[in-house]
Length: 74
Image 1 (cartoon, rainbow, N blue to C red):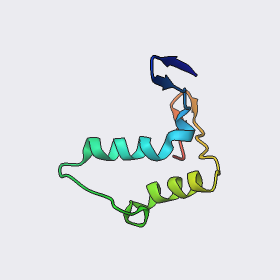
Image 2: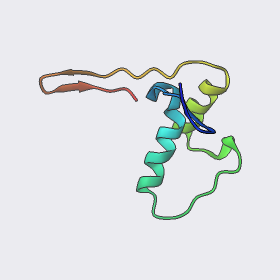
Image 3: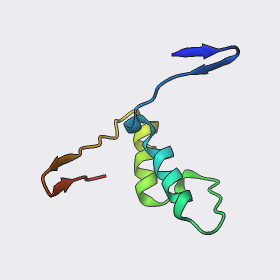
Image 4: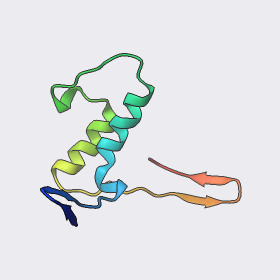
């Protein structure tokens, strides 16, 4: 963690930030403004990662790349 004046920064791995990453990707492709006022209204994949975050379960990202084969379950 580092700080700059009254701001502080902490590095967060993508796996810990999965919900925000998915929301950002969704916003990038969305053509309309969408508001989510409750977690229950989130798309199912995002709800799953959010629920994991709430109960402190890790969101695991596995990516294996061999030649022309890519396995990415996320």
